[in-house]
Length: 241
Ligand SMILES: Nc1ncnc2c1ncn2[C@@H]1O[C@H](COP(=O)(O)OP(=O)(O)OP(=O)(O)O)[C@@H](O)[C@H]1O
Ligand SMILES: [Mg+2]
Image (cartoon, rainbow, N blue to C red; front, side, top):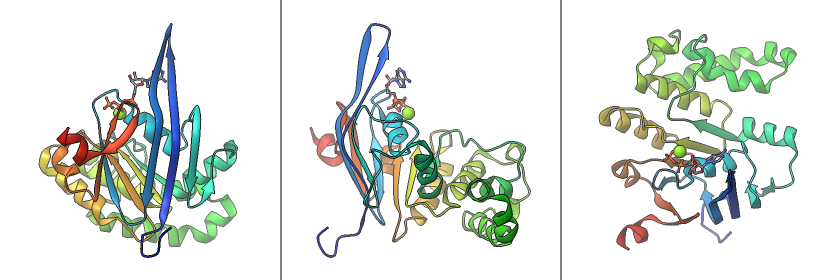
């Protein structure tokens, strides 16, 4: 790392991913490279079916590449086993999805607490739960939902659900926040609000990657990349071609 540059949080090199579909071999990612640095919000654009969600699944350790390497804060994850991958995912990576994926039976506060609960053994939980609840409440305040902590998802608007999902994704203070079309299901004004909330969570130790079809919001990112032909290319340059 050259001096003065923000720390490299996540590095992907030469990622390949194919799917078999009957006789066909779908080559989706073909030698993709990506560097994510602390403090940046990076937008990824690309046509439907090009492999954006596939990429997020690999970065989120929900799936494995056929080839290539992933390094999170200097730690090589290529050879990590299942339990290690689960621990890294829960501890260091936050997810926000298009359809929120909140647990319907739980209140907003309980949804936000869930990643902390999963990470903590029962005895430790009894010791730390007060502090964790405070953090969950503070996060809900930060996303403007301090007055909705007891609401269940069914009684929240779409934008509010997504803000709960963002608070949940941040509960364990992840180094990387991966967002797959977080505003894809929201009207333009609500989308802008959710985007602004995301931007506000850029941190000195955190990078945010947002897949979006919304070019207006993407233009507000620190960098815009376009997934094309299985690789990421500079968004501005790609738009000029
Ligand atoms: N498990 C799978 N088995 C077979 N094909 C798959 C599988 N998962 C994804 N694909 C195919 O891989 C391609 C990339 O899918 P992906 O979901 O990554 O696209 P995307 O860029 O996120 O699209 P969208 O913008 O519509 O969400 C698609 O053509 C899809 O049909
Ligand atoms: Mg997708």
